[in-house]
Image 1 (cartoon, rainbow, N blue to C red):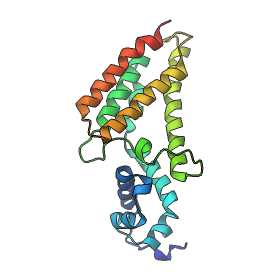
Image 2: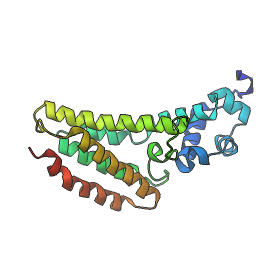
Image 3: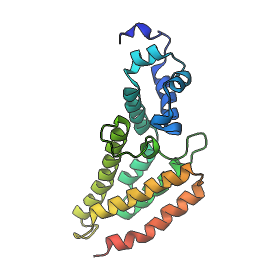
Image 4: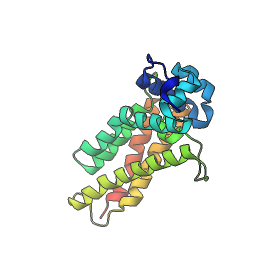
Length: 201
């Protein structure tokens, strides 16, 4: 569509933040077009003019989320001085980020769309891509520790990365179900009990 439906007073960034929070709370399918336009403070023609479609809006909302929410989780993974500490900080930062008062509990990347085997579902494909990237980021951090000699050459990089991402995913679901920060931190510390299993020569 052309730009004719878009009001000049329209704050695109603010509207995107509002849409992101609705997707975060309700999921892609649960956020109807009527709810999106009401939440964003615009009409349907303005939404289409500014974002193109609901699918495109969702993709932008996910990108906005990745840029502005939970950034400290991945920073902790990269900046910690040791591999073990990077994983521990990663999980503890997750516990904090998933239980911030005023934010929807849990993670948009995990909870934003129903799990579906239909590869044609745009929202599911978008989130699955992000989850695979997250898995790769954890694996890359562990592989770097192997290359630097911190972890043994036989360290199961892919298995350990999958394990700790699954812990993080479970924390998101539990947070949505009402788990508080203290509970999530206990899960994070419990998961670190398995570190010796992964790092043993």
